[in-house]
Every structure is written in C-alpha cells, then in structure tokens.
Amino acid sequence: MQTLALLIQVLKKNKIRMTTIRKALLTLLLLRAQPMSVYDFQNQLKKQGVLAHKVTLYRDIELLCKLGIMREVSFTDGFRRYELEEDHHHHAVCTACKQVFEINDPQLEKAVFSLERRTKKLHHFASLSHHLEFLGVCTRCVKRS
Amino acid sequence: MQTLALLIQVLKKNKIRMTTIRKALLTLLLLRAQPMSVYDFQNQLKKQGVLAHKVTLYRDIELLCKLGIMREVSFTDGFRRYELEEDHHHHAVCTACKQVFEINDPQLEKAVFSLERRTKKLHHFASLSHHLEFLGVCTRCVKRS
DNA sequence: TTGCAATATGCAACTCAGTTGCATATAATA
DNA sequence: TATTATATGCAACTGAGTTGCATATTGCAA
Image (cartoon, rainbow over all chains, first blue to last red; front, side, top):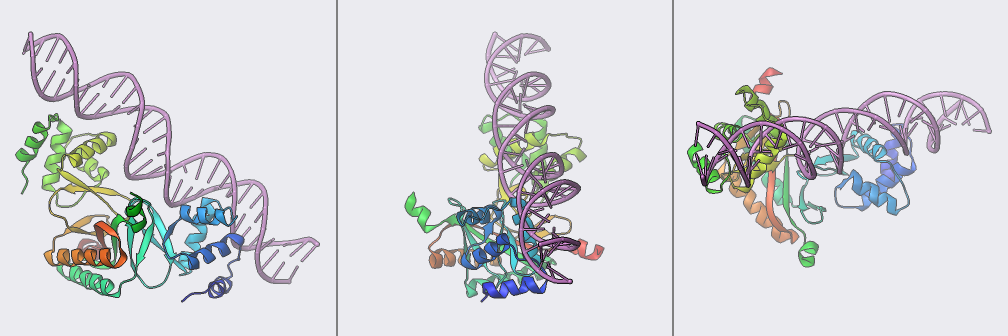
C-alpha cells in the first residue's frame, strides 16, 4: 500500500521539486481507484481549485511514470489513462459514461498469464505483455437507461 | 469461407456500386490474414496501382462494416484496424514493426469467454464484448535485432 | 451507345489527443 | 532574500479520423 508521504519521499530522493500540481496529482492518484485520462485529472483538479494546463499534466505524468509511481495504459477508445503502479490488473470500460473500473480478480489474472504463455509458445511470439479490456455498460448506466 | 464473388453479390443485393477501389479492397481483404489500418490499405492498393484517398477508404470501410463484410477493431497503439467479419479472434501486435497477427486458438477463445462471464457476475457489469491484445516482438523482428 | 441522375471520390478544412519550443514563473538552496 | 535551475503556460504543431462541398464515375433507361 502506498501513502502520500512515501511518494513525496520518492520525489525528494530524485531531487524533483514538489509543486501544487504534483501534490494534488499524487493525492488524487491515491484516492481514486480508476485509471484516469489527462482530462479526468484536469477536471478533478479543477474541482479542488487547482488549475493545470494539459501540457503540464502530460509532462508531470510522464515524470511520475519514469519514477515508477504511475503507469500508462492505452485503451481502445483512443485515450491513454494512468494509474498507480501496483499489481497488474485488467479493466472494464463503460461505453456509456467512459468510466473505467479496475478488475482485481486473482483467478482471472492467473488465467490470462497462462494464455500469454500459451500464445508465446504456439505463435513463436516474444510476448512481453498483454492488454485485456471488457467493454460494456456499468450498473449505474444500466439503471439510468 | 468467403469468396470475392460472394462479397460482390452482397454489394449488388444492397444496390451499392462496384468501383475499382471497392473491388481492390475486397480482394485485399480476402488475401491478407492480418487486420489492416486505413494506411495499410492505402499502401497495399498503391502497390497494385490503385490510388485511393484516405477519406474514400474511411467511407468505403464504414460501408463494408455496415454490410457486415468487415469489422473494426481498435488497438491500444491508437490505430483502428479492419478485418473480414468471420469468427471472433484475438491479436498479437509486434511493437517493433507494428504488424498485427491473428491468433486462432479455440482453447484461448473458450478461456476468455469464461473470463468474460466471470467478470460480468463478479462486477455486475453488463459486459458486451472484450478486447485481448498481446504485445511483443515477432519472430522476424527478433532475428533482425 | 449515349445521356441522365444518383452515387462515389477527392479536396480542403476541420476536430481532438498528444507533442514541442520557448518565454515566464516558481521552488529549493546558499 | 537573491540566485538559478526547474516547472508551468502559451502557441503552434502532428497525425488519425471527420465533414461539406464540388467534381467524377457508375448503372440504368431510352
């Protein structure tokens, strides 16, 4: 489990300055369970009164990725989203509200990794990683319709 | 198994005109096993001396998708690719040469569908579809490096 | 085979996520 | 508090995909 204090330490160690935007970003990351796009971040920060230009967010996010704090995940809807670098997991994307839900299911995890090994062998492909995404409609959007 | 004659029939039935570009598109679709982007199509057609504007290709592809002849698949590299509408399958993307390889593996298929059912139940998500993509390096690119 | 009308194509100009160069603002250190 | 390196914002760009409109081509009828 990560904490804000721990993440701030990582920046200090790497001689990276702590700014309003970066602190707000880290706090948000720890709070939210879903991977977020740059525009999600921007909107959430705005609600807290922190105005940040998209360029700044792209650059800060890149930095945090390089430091191993967060990770980039590309989705098939054309958006790159970002999440805390913790254990690998998969996602369910609501095609109605565009929200992304994390799926933490160790059994699913195991199954997909064995599929990756299988694919590697059968197709002589030096597989490095995989991306599994479920597309559908979340409970809230189902109720709404 | 689809044939060119059969696909041409589909267009005729729907009162859609047969043009040089459309015929070349259909022929290419039947020939190539990999899903292709608009730019892949454009390059392949150019090799056969058929010059087509990207706008035309986007529109023709949309048409063929609506007719149920081809299907759009979005990839995490930000490109939409298109393939013959046949049985569902997954893909392995070579991060070096950007080529996409189809994976036809009934066992993998079964496994992923059961994962989809599982996710649906566990996360109360009205899952409609999924996207599984393996990222790695193909045999040719491994040899090259 | 030709002429006509409807459809197909190409062009220009757009949208929108993400990127880059550069000028200005701000954080950390002395 | 002054200095200086780094962080931020702005403007202008890139590249996939889209749209409106003028022109070219197809399929059909005479």
